[in-house]
Image (cartoon, rainbow, N blue to C red; front, side):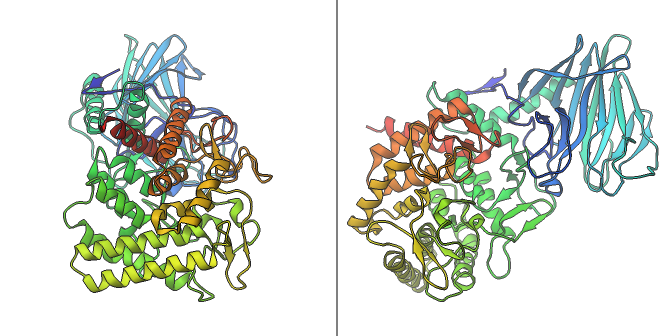
Length: 591
């Protein structure tokens, strides 16, 4: 392990998170199931794969090559001996394969006592996988419609088994095979470079160990910018920083800024509320990256003001949207000192347009309450809160987010000297709060109201009904006290359950119908703080920190055991861990 300052590289479990680095669209990933991801229709053998996480392959198998050891003419499955962000060591037969980075677009391989084989894995519907020799030391590999690589020999031998023109049915056994073998001394060095359009050969290659040292120092220097965390939390904090660094991709395609993908497993994109929590998480160490995350959806905002549901280097998805948490996030970035000079003037008109979009296009019945068209719009895709009403649905969380966003717009307008606009936003925030309390409060609980006929219901015991706590003293005392009393039903030793385990609708691995999620746990904690319940908020925060320490950065966690579920290389879980650790330790150090 390499340590710089207070950062130390931690071991990575490749069964949960890919091996990658900041800026790169390449990973080495373990596929541990015979199927690559639920909902896809290709059987993929378990093993280690070199993957492409560009948005072009979102929701598709993103493996490009299967990685195998080569003993003579026999292939063997490599086993992970150790894995840190700067060095992956595999064993194969009696030999070893070491992998490091040489910049963000190139993986470097060093083999000892064994060869290495790359076998085409990319699903190629256009039958376009091709390979061309550039010279005696390099081959250009076109692996599908939009995946280009160059394999370079730096020592040892390189052979490629591939016709120049592929014929026959697509996805046949006619696979491109790249073999790297050691020299007579049993050592070989190779490079695999990903490129988009044209490839320019390097004039100079760093020695392997220097390349490894350079990437280790880059990561350590970045992670060292985060505040020092107490000894018991430090290893998880270092791992969280490393995961966020690893999940970051560089500007490319329609992305004009670096972006932190939600994961480099299969959720390799940016969702327009996930990025808000990531932004707040990295604000304590890299304010510029935090601002870039916040602004990415606004860079690609529709002319009518909508923010895309999903965005990546190759495009945007408009079928759904995500809740307007952006005013709440901007308030947090301001508090963290992560808004650059000129930032408020840059984002203000865009945040106005996003707010107006909801009020203009998501209130079909004209009652003043905006509505979700689908559970995905809420971010809590299949929440039980919508079971009794269906859609369109006005949720109390949505109105609360808008009240906060309008309050923040009023604050920002004041700072920009737009006093009349500030007054107007303050008035509109008060009006939205009035609608929330008159139409979405039944005297005992917040409810969901169906657009069009006004049918209202409080279904199940979803955490969604707790989120208006973010309004704090904006809520009447009676309402605040009643909602605070409901928190206990969703509270477990591990965090805030998305559905109370005591509910008849609870599902242990039901996505938003039971498991604990980082962002909503944080929103409930923030709401408790806003309501003066700091002790309970801190207690829940510590529970969640312990859950992550034990289970890693999973997409979500089983509510009654804390068991990690789904994707286990998830950025917003790492980001919320860093936020909570930083905030709780800051409180404890304050006299």
